[in-house]
Image 1 (spheres, rainbow, N blue to C red):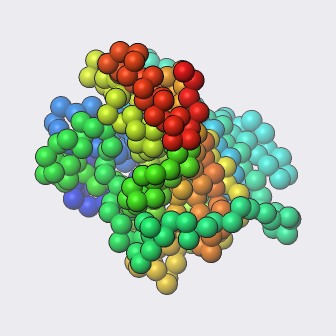
Image 2 (tube, rainbow, N blue to C red):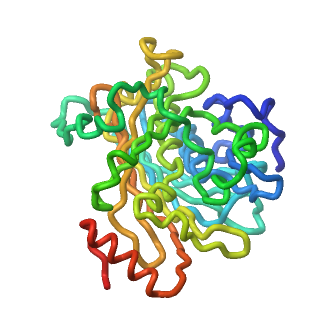
Image 3 (cartoon, one colour):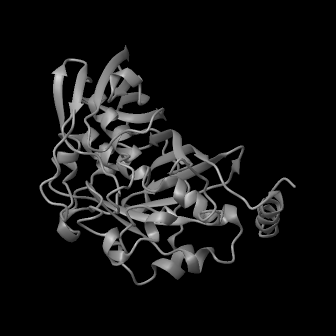
Length: 354
């Protein structure tokens, strides 16, 4: 079913509106709000942001669990590209309902004749405070060259897309109304060049901040909605960060007009209870709390790349971890060019097979 345009191409859609679902029956839900696509040109592909279907599938699953169960682990598989202006249908299956944990599987379709577009498994649990709590310490001092003297809102917005073709468009085409603002969240990208320029590829980082758009219910009454906002952020320009950290963003293969980079699977693990995921903070600008995401890569081979991230909350609390496996097909001007690039990465401290 084709969905109507958002009311204004200049305003960010609130996160609650973006996640809204129409209930078909006890196990089936349908999206009512268009997914994000960067567009830019009228003839640009109308492909939906993968983080939308990933997150909304979890939100659909959350409608089927008892209050008190919060999602703590999600693994999803992207099967087919989907259309941003068509609705998704989410079919939820109950795998198990236990006393402490319950598991759901969600299958997602658009055009049923084409089969599944996305599938995932979600595990929900009851919060169990009082157990051993250990985490690696967040050392923000190491990022002084890019963070010192700045607040999250001082950094520029993420570009709507980090494909070379999009960034090459005139600036007017990279902004509304040609390219609508990223919905649901405000996401800020830190310029990491001063930090990354002399580091080996595995030690490079991409930092970004995210905060919710629009009113949210308190985390005490809707913990899974707050979790979903972090899931939505976890896929933001993910593989393009991997390509940038390995300096191959200008070498992506284009086949039949489509860049050969796409998420294949994405896993997010939530480590904390709802209070540490709360996006509301009256002490912050617009009453929203900012979260920091630290991303990196340590592997690319066989036409695929790995993307890692940690999400850090208030007080340096490590609240979530993500791992993504994605297709990254590159176009080289002969094997010699690829080997020279591998050698350059190796000489900076990264191991490459020669």
